[in-house]
Length: 347
Image (cartoon, rainbow, N blue to C red; front, side):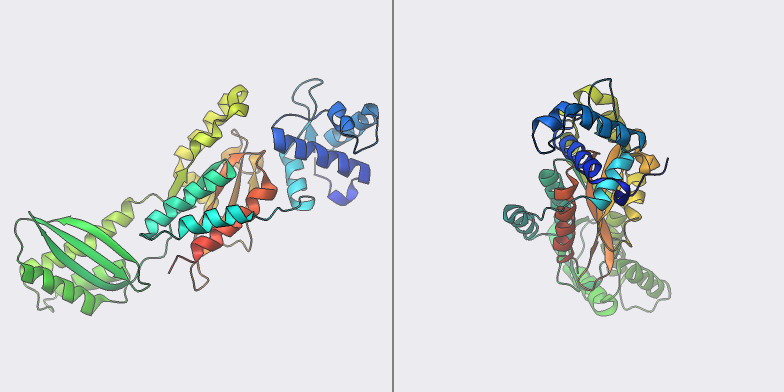
């Protein structure tokens, strides 16, 4: 049955419908006619309220999970409420400060992504998710420093000023001159390229004998760049934090649904594909329950927003996942703010 637009509901029906949805989102429990009548805001008898509730149920907007247990919104009802009736609640000063201060901590971009996922989880009470940026870093400067005992420290400085370090295991002792030669070669010849471009050009030049590198330095060049290529390939496409938030007191009677949701999160590739569909969105997207087949069993919702680099290019998506009774009015603006804050860190 098609969901009726908000305009087709009477004023009385809209008010009662909003009261049920807001009560459900607040408590996670069905809302009955006596509860609505008791707060005095409707000036209607429980019998009159029950009649409206029955009409809203017939329209597919509400459902009664048990006899005489009150009503709760269906996925279609939640969609109608979110798109046509919900009043957004801007993040508080404390929430803004928490997001901005935790993302302001110095460190590699991976650390910022981990922090972002944790922030979303902490502030939403759900699980936070961040897709790793797909745009590759461009080289600015590269150095290899001898640590002794067959190890070297590879330091990569990006064009945006970001710094990343990796420890390389070397095949025996390597002279400092070879480390210096390899560092100078990479910086002078490959600066401004992505890692993929750099590795391809480097291998072509070495294979064609067009470099002045000796054998030891050539091996260091290849190993130095490969460590980042290997690292990038092993990075998860999705960082998820706060799964424990999904196991609150309200889930005790619905453990199968939660188990299904946790299984969905284990399959990060499928969740990442869902988030990928939000990359080109102009605003934060909301996926509610069975609207997406991935969450048809778990009955979960996802709030997702793309985040952009300083040039306005979309480089990833972040968001939260939780039960359909998420506080959409609060979480949607918070996800949007977090996306904009993370974007400021991306070169």
